[in-house]
Amino acid sequence: MPLWDGRFSEGPDALVLRLSESIHYDCRLYPFDLQGSMAHAKMLAHQGIIPQEDADKILAGLQQVKEELDSGKFVFKTELEDIHMNIESRLTELIGAPGARLHTGRSRNDQIATDERLYLRHVIDEIREDVRNFQKALWKLGKENATVIMPGFTHLQHAQPVLFAHHLLAYVEMLERDRERLADCRHRINRLPLGAGALAGSTLPLNREFVAKELGFEGVLQNSMDCVADRDGSIEFLSDLAIIAMHLSRFAEDVAIWFSQEFAFVEIGDAFTTGSSLMPQKKNPDMAELTRGKTGRVYGALMGLLTTLKGLPLTYNRDLQEDKEGLFDAVDTVDLVLRTLTAMLGTVKPRPARMAEAASDPSLMATDLAEALVKQGVPFREAHHQVGRFVGACTAKGITLAQADLALMKESIPTAVPEFLDIFDAEHSAAARDLTGGTAPAQVAKQLDNWEKKFTQE
Ligand code: ARG
Image (cartoon, rainbow, N blue to C red; front, side, top):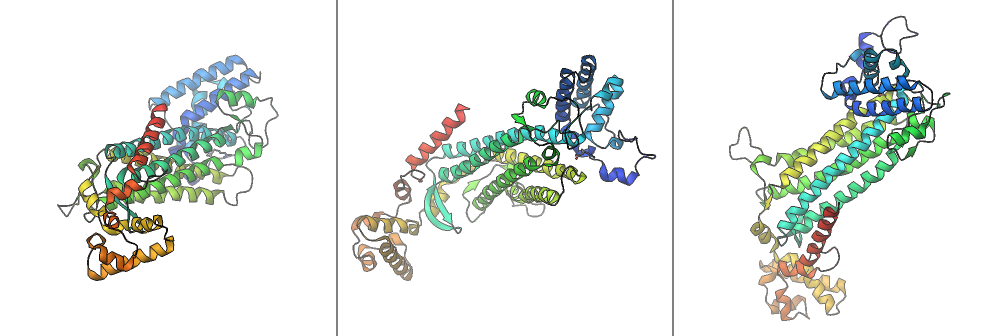
């Protein structure tokens, strides 16, 4: 019979158990459930609510349960529904009567809310670390190839020359915002719900501040109903994961494009590519594709939880139990993808000659030509128009901008001077973008240094 069987004359139907049990997935919360219970037991004794000897027995018993769980010897029982009742029941088996005092002043409603906050705090730290490692891998690839030039794209069309490292550092920036979001969310999560009881608080003289301190929370949640009804922390964290997954998916798409035969901008190590079961020649960027594909399930977890919460009256409703599987899956997915991409980056090698060839298309420097006119005092709109005419004239003749002579250039650009003929050089073009955030090698080197300092100061 379940631990709540007092008023029932028969046990639950087998189907009821199948639909309501959560132990097969919430078992992963055990370290946090134990942590919460230990702090709760200490507080109960500190407040004189239970005898100190009983608290000591509870703590020793929980330690024993922990060892069983850590070593994989613990036997989970589906009929005990969830991690809370599995642990409490085993504790009582081990230590007898004092075990029955642990749940004093506590409900599974505030217990699960506490477990989840402890879990979220832990996985936030893990994901932040994963993100940092991925940033370092991006940085390293950039640093090792600091002078490699490639075409930058808008609309997936050649736009302007950029440094390969500049492109990689763009992701380092995005991921830094992701890390900040996670750190920010961690503060809001880091508050104690325990002490709310089922929903209204307790008639017992619980000391919530004591428990908060014991568990390293930054404070105590101030409304007992909010304590048990709220899942904002999980939603906020999933939003952060969704944004990370979106960033990783964009990166994956860049890699897939760069790895295509048409681009052939990068090599990826054999250990991080896959073959085809039919076509012997194939080497596919499956890790990039899976990264892109797995974004869907992370978004799904966020949408699922938002939908579960929508329209739920206060306070605890059993619907809330559905908050876990999607969350765990999203954590596992983002963690695995980040670690795989980090390892894969270690095997990525740019092909500078291919990139330089693509970046040498003189039309990439059309903007530079217009800006040279601006430096002569020509209004930008007029300069843009003149250069556009020049591009049209070259296209009509079937030549590149670099193949035109001064006479042809002057037909569209009356103030053209011989130096304008030297503008069509990708390296010169990149180097000229020498302002904060620009792609000039000097600027990119500065950014690489800044990141290195940041990484080594941690
Ligand atoms: N396993 C439950 C959950 O995750 C714990 C809380 C159950 N509370 C209850 N009153 N049935 O939500």
